[in-house]
Each structure stands twice: as structure tokens, then as C-alpha cells.
Image (cartoon, rainbow, N blue to C red):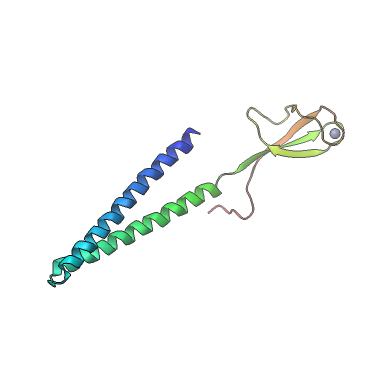
Length: 133
Ligand SMILES: [Zn+2]
């Protein structure tokens, strides 16, 4: 939870920097255009600098979106595989805190109703379409 909050504040700072850059770019373009009639080299440079600033901000923005997307992709589900000691039925569900292999789980078997489900495996589920690069 606290990690997620930390990530959010970092995002806000980034968005702030990007907004400032865009604003600066717009101001530079505007100033450049104002002076364009006089045909000075200075206003030309200001205009180009403004465009560059906005382009850099746009690039930062797309990079940020990409990072955010990747962060989401790299969140794996940890699942627990339970097996009934009476009938051997296996079932899978998200792992809960404090679980370990060999532990007797609290739930009943869905097939025979016996109260003897034990944890066989705990593993990290990586969806096939989400390849790690
Ligand atoms: Zn069973």
C-alpha cells in the first residue's frame, strides 16, 4: 500500500515537470512569434526552442506512460494449489498471508467436502502474453 502511494507522488512530480515544460515551450513559441515580424534571429531561436521543449515534454510523457504500463504488466499473481487428502482433487486460489507448502488449509474440498485440503504448491503466475524483457 505504502509503495503504491510513493509511486503516485512520484507520478505527480513528473506530471508537474512536464506541465512546466509545456508551459515554457508555449511561452517561448509565443515570444518567438511576437518577435518574428522584426525578423530577428533571436525570435527564430526562441520559437525553435519552444517547439523542442514541447517535443521533449511529449517524449517524457510517453516514456512515463510506457513505464506505468510495464509496472502493471510485471505484477504477478501468487497462487496456492491445494489438494484434498481424501480424494486428490486439486484447486487453485490466490495465496494468503502466512501460507506455506504442506500446511493444512482452512477450506473444505469442493468435491467430497472433507476438511483436509493441504497446500501442495505456491507459485508465481505469469500470464503467457506478458513476456518479461
Ligand atoms: Zn476431496
